[in-house]
Image 1 (tube, rainbow, N blue to C red):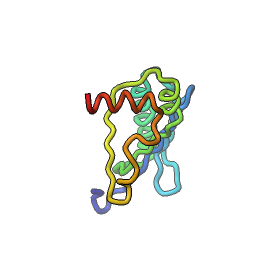
Image 2: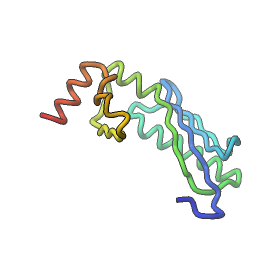
Image 3: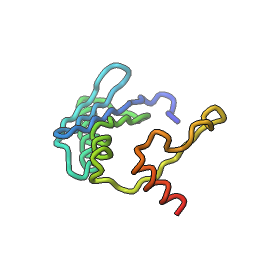
Image 4: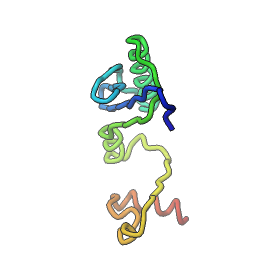
Length: 122
């Protein structure tokens, strides 16, 4: 919940094969930005890029509360497609009556579905 009178910001992160970009946005105005090298472990690069973008915003006199973080998926999708540098994660499917006709993992690649459903059921 955003406190009344506190400026709210959105952070956007794009993880590419070479660079990780992060932008702090208020409405349609970029108030802070960072471009860093993509790290091998991805997570530390994302954290670093977000921290640098927030510092850039702060230096420019912008401070407030982060209400949303969006992370681009290209690099993550490439990891799944290539089946390398993957870590264990949880998949939570929240759905209502209209989506019960679509089975879980229906659009996952068969080999990933097999591994993931084995971990759940096995």
